[in-house]
Image (tube, rainbow, N blue to C red):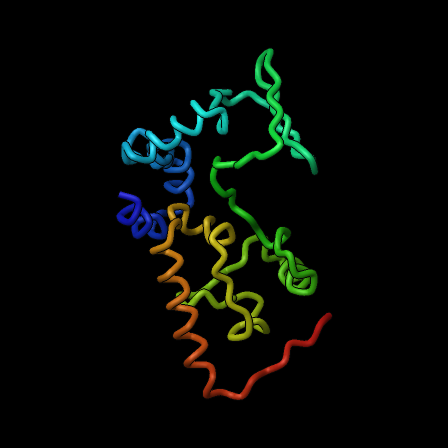
Length: 179
C-alpha cells in the first residue's frame, strides 16, 4: 500500500495530513516479520556465531555516537558497539540540513524551510534556482512524499532528473551568482 498512499498523500489538506501522520502513517513501518526466512536464518547464524548482537531497547533510550564506538543506554542496561548499523530509517531533512553552504544560504534566505521541487526534482523556489539545481535525495523529499523509499523510487527519481537534464541541454546555461 506504500505506493497507493504515496499517490494520495499530496492530495490531503494540511489538517488531513496531520491526522494521517498521527495515526495511519504508523502502519507503514517496515514489517520485519515479512522478511524472507532465508534472511532471518542468516541473521540468526551471525548472532549464534557471536558476530551480531540483537537487543530490544524500546523507545526510551539514549544513543551516543562516538568516533570509536556507539553507546546506547536503555533502562538499566548499557550497550557498547564498535560497529553499529543504525537501521531506524531516514529522518526528514530541510533546507537547514543542505550540506552545500551557498545553496543552504540561498534557500534559507528565501524563507524556504523545505526545498520545493517539481516533477523533475528541480528546485522551484526561489525562482533564481529554477532549472539550475535538482534535488533527488530521499530525506529532502520525505516532507511531501513520506513513503519514498527503495531502489525503485530512486530509479524513477533518477530517470525524471535525467529527462530534465536532457531537455535543458538544448538551452544556454545560466550562472548562479553567490550572495
